[in-house]
Amino acid sequence: MTRVIAVANQKGGAGKSTVTVNLAVALGQAGRRVLVVDVDPQFDTTAMLGYAPEDAPHTLADVFLGESEADDALLTDAAPGVDLLAGDSRMADVELTLVSQVRREEFLAEALTEILPRYDYLVLDCPPNLGLLTVNAFVAADEVLVPVSMIDRNAYKGAATLLSTLDTLRRRRVDVRTLGLLRNNVDPRRNTFQTLDEALPELDAPLLQAQIPMRSSFHDATTEGIPLVLRKPDGRAAQAFRELAAEIEATDARPRKTTDKTMVEVA
Image 1 (tube, rainbow, N blue to C red):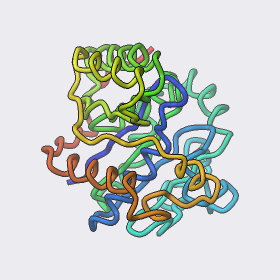
Image 2 (cartoon, rainbow, N blue to C red):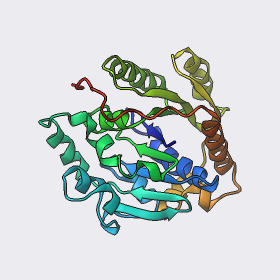
Image 3 (tube, rainbow, N blue to C red):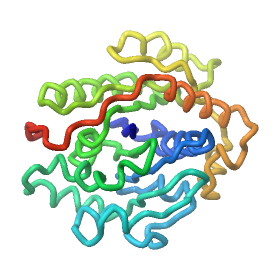
Image 4 (tube, rainbow, N blue to C red):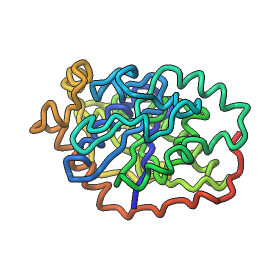
């Protein structure tokens, strides 16, 4: 059964693209078939896997615009065990076109339906906001993983706002649960880490055991277009992502949504 995980935080700088890529690679290393879907107009996930939008036969923007099926847009074996549905900057324009569409929040879920059974996991990198592209990802997903930067004092507020949005969507019959809060950019010596670490359990969401350490090597990996799990596989950060993958695998899979479920339109 395929699990679809949206990686989201409305606040920029949380490290969601880094988490998306390295989690996907760690799952691939564990023998799972994984598809990464880059929903973010900044297409950082695509770049972190070493690709530019023009390297792909088509991008997610083409799929949204009806110029390609998802199956025809895939970059296969972007990393061991990992395929990629690339993003590009046109996704910002796509979001504007969705405003006038009927069932606008369900487009991504419908576009992915045919390729879904090929994979054990789909990991969706969301934009750093709560707009229509992010809502599309939430509707397509079973679970939302929320990275929280532990060097940002505003991270608690951002996570709380996102969780509130998920509660609103659930009241509108969008069937998605919170997989957990992921402590990212962890440096236990910092006062900010200690403050946030004490506050996060107060939020109404699971707090994952895995913690991703703050490492300068993430920047080098991003520059080179090589996921850190592959670039420095023996490092502590790579091990942390393998621990995260194992923790996610150990949780119960969420049953897939039925495609004929009546959805209440999301404003």
